[in-house]
Amino acid sequence: MLKSYVLWVALKFTQHELWAINFALLRPQLSLFGAASLWVWIFPPLISLGLVLGYMMENFPTAGSAVNLVIGLPSLLILAYWVFRWYFICLALMFGRRTMAEKKRAEVSARIQKLLSA
Image 1 (cartoon, rainbow, N blue to C red):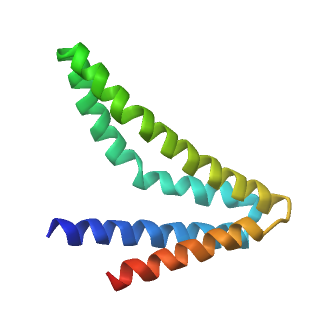
Image 2: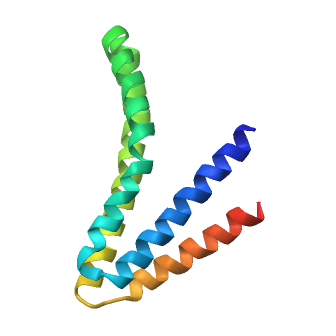
């Protein structure tokens, strides 16, 4: 049950990502809005994780700091890579270069096919 739900969420996020890249290809000047719409998928898990980490920092400062460091730093690095990649794709589209966007669309389409076959 949980595995099917996780697969469903991954599929819907990937389909939304494909929509965002297609929107960006159609309207390059508005491409940042399509990319920003992907944050809808990221905020709920971040808020729940932030509440747990905040509780741990308040009640168990040493353990909370260690968990925050172990979870927070890698998450921040992964999120920064994802955000800056989307930003550079949108920026390239605004200047008329479609190669990064086409490559991203191919990657997302392949990921959708992989999720559908799982």
